Length: 110
Figure (cartoon, rainbow, N blue to C red):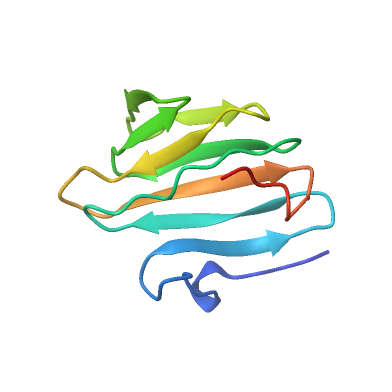
């Protein structure tokens, strides 16, 4: 068993960016917080599928360049090779859970 508390983990940029809660051995997952005007950063994966669950806010997700307005409660599963980005084009911070499987931390296409 592994236990972690989100409040004990830090965001990459201090008060925004990704916050990893668990990394390996089979999946990695965490929370992304984007302030107004921030974006996750477009990328894709060769072998990893990634799921996003939007639980706080309604940003725009871009998948292969196609924008989609998110609603709170939406979940998106992306296949390997699908280029994606999340843009917080709203006036409030957003929070998103991400889950990546399998655990291949170097599997990123910029």
